[in-house]
Length: 63
Image (cartoon, rainbow, N blue to C red; front, side, top):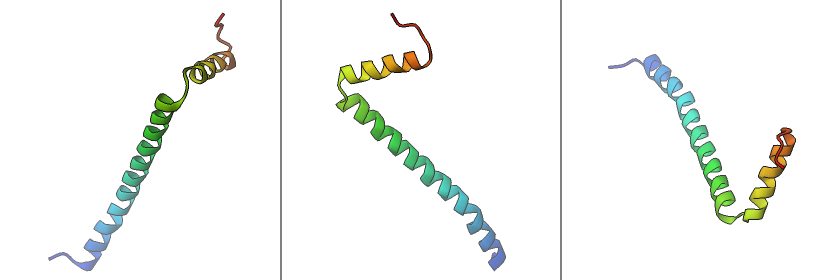
């Protein structure tokens, strides 16, 4: 049988792992919803203009 300190150490070690899983799942959900919104609901002109402005901000020639 395990002692109380061994059980406390195991549960303390699991806490950061659970926090990392929750953070990873939250990030995946936010990115997924963002991609769905941009890809599904944004107009083509809006996406083109955003990409075009991005090229200008990095000083890429585009014309």
